[in-house]
Image 1: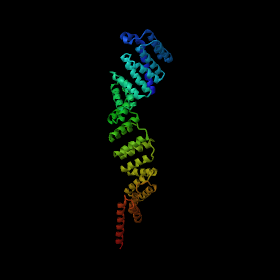
Image 2: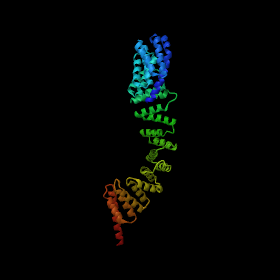
Image 3: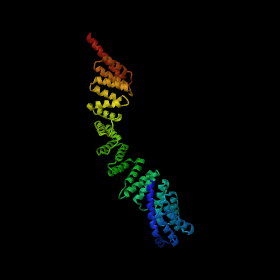
Image 4: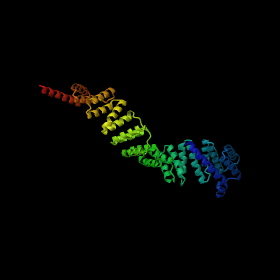
Length: 415
């Protein structure tokens, strides 16, 4: 902010210095209130010429002579303070610069247009010092007496209010700047967007974000922000659509982008596409199949009933997972596919790896697999362990009764 404001102030210094260096006689003829005596005019002209040539010490000497030796009237004093402020600003001495400019403005002895312009410059100098509340005070006074502010000036007011934490004011003036400008700058839209977000005005923020994307379709962060904004208004389908467009356009770059897209497909019950997104990104070296990515791929293929790919994906995810939950998923799939021995092995690995909400479900799966392959003693042992867990107690006891009835029926048949 500081360097940018200094550049603006330097431009203002040059322009205003140029205006005054040729305008004293005209002012005197126009209104006797603004009379500059010839000797004072000569010193002011020398000072302004020195400022334009960046000979600031020489400028200060000329201005000091006016103040101490020439008994200036209020108009001459105001011009002297004003020029002194510009000289200090050119030296990047902002505290004395704003003090001098304020003294010039307080005299109220400059033509109205110059008086108002000076007030705007005072606001800019306060901004350059990061004194944003003081800048807002000056700029509010300026805007109150300015009939047709330029879009650039409106943006300056918006920026000051934003930095002063006046988000409603920032949004108001940023809107005016954007509406009045023939050519809107991205920085203006970004400030307006930030103000809307701080105010939680999600719908207008979405509109600004869409406009930024139209202007910068290759900027990844804009697509991610638009996705987040749609999430704020609970429009998950449009959030997914935005991510999909970014994906198709090749804008997504980071691991978390692909993970987020896959998770959004999962949330919308499109599991196969969720898996495909990560598998494709993995093949292109965009993501590594770490524990999280492997889990999303495996779960998505499992839910999509793509058993051929789900089993090896679940096995891979289970190996790198921190707990045994993925081995449980693998065991469930293997039981559905009547792969009894593999289901027993996966369930045992789930118990060994640990971190399960309850071991009861794993023992229950072991029991089912053992019973299906005719190993009644092993099944009874597993069901007995499963019955000790509250979440599987009822199912395990049902299986134990089934085994007992089966054994009784076999005994009766043997007799």
